[in-house]
Image (cartoon, rainbow, N blue to C red; front, top):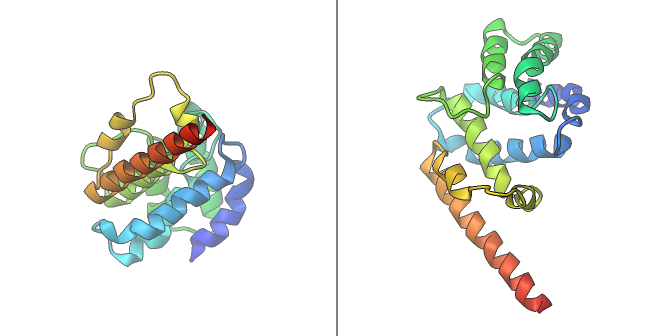
Length: 171
């Protein structure tokens, strides 16, 4: 699969993001575990996983990812001789991957939902939880896939329970 080679090429660019390449690897693992929950043939896997690797390329700011990301992605994908159709598709999704689109390709849904579910991970939850007025319910409601939405609810409940337990043990 080409996406594994792409990951090696992309890693230096991904380290420019807030969570670094580790975020990308977490999103990728979520997508791999949940791929079959979407209506996509297995032949799309390499393209989907390549999109996931490149989704945050371009910088830590969403604006930079949208503006610089597609150009960087195109160069990396061309180095590995990806098909032009796949390059255009991947780049078009990078340029709007934080937006909840109406009726997008399942490839985009996998990225979007996986990128949302990673927010509930032990590594990232506290970052979002510490933001004033952050609304977990809005994130949960934004999932395309019902199973992924339910997973997010369960994870959030579990994390809250862990947090409360730690808090009570400290008192």
